[in-house]
Length: 209
Image 1 (tube, helix red, strand yellow):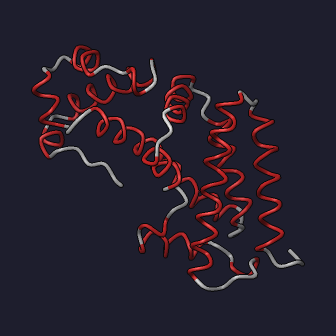
Image 2 (image 1 turned 45 degrees about the horizontal axis):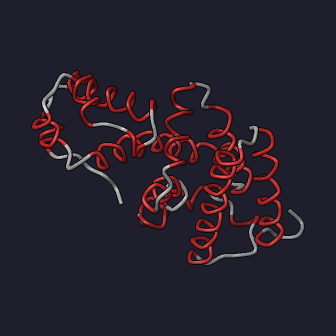
């Protein structure tokens, strides 16, 4: 489910929108979601509680609007990876996972995502897996699907490809959870994910690939 603020939020000046989002980012980075305080957010942003509810329904909506904004970048990045790897789905997915595990060098970004993973709910999982769950949007699936080189695959129908997206998204999300809960290093998490992708590849790729 895509989170959209109330129209009054978009009516704010860019500087005020940025200030509110930065204040929320700071709070959700400081503590896990369930400990985050609207009082702290509005104090830092310099707005009243009444104003806050004119922009967002509740703390959840603000939180997921921020999370989805961060993950939107990964969707664009994934399309670029498919082009870089000449449509090789598995190689693109492996590099995207590495992006999450390694490329987020900013410690605040890492802490925000860690707090998100510790607050694991169906909605959090849906936000993360929407990177691959392009079947939720037919036009987006069509765009990404055209970048995938199906000559590598022993499947052809769109429905089969959609199921592959579901499997990949579940494996990727579980890998992030495993890293967070078990305290795995980036290298350990990537080795685990590469093994999963290797096993998946044996099932969906043609034998000569």
